[in-house]
Image (cartoon, rainbow, N blue to C red; front, side):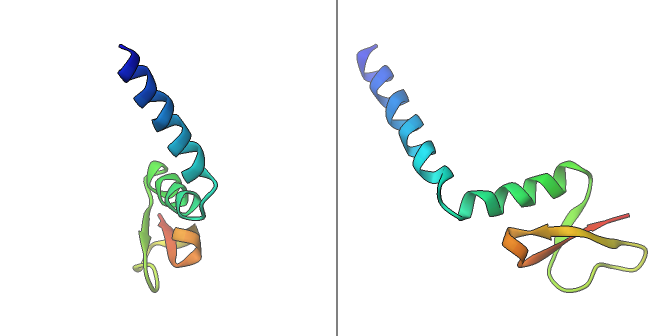
Length: 65
């Protein structure tokens, strides 16, 4: 039980460290786009779709109907 608690605390500490890195917000932008039924794409969005934001720190476009 003590080992499980230590591992849990270490996992929380690691998550806190990762949260401050630029990678995590980029991924969150991707999930935010996908959660609204949209998708991320490099280049232009297909016909009948419009750009509604960005994904992966601006590297991709979030395409929506």
